[in-house]
Length: 117
Image (cartoon, rainbow, N blue to C red):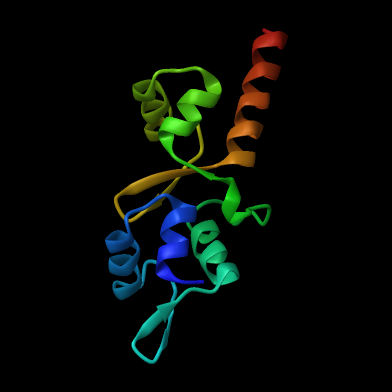
């Protein structure tokens, strides 16, 4: 996939994706003067940063704002929970992204705890 396509999927600026490729944060392949990304390599790189899970689909990557909207929480609360490890997230360079199924699992665990308390 192209850098533009990956930027759209990860909801990052194109310049950030290109910078992360140059710095080796996101794996890429040079084809002539073009940079290309292989979806499975990008998935693996993201997952290597967070618990090595294999259930990631790049369409399941969310921003903090999307998580806040889905959970009907303030953005600052979601960011705080991510920093404190309550909500699992992945750092891609300076950007924090959330994997949908991991957020869903964390919410389900919290619901289980609150019901048993």
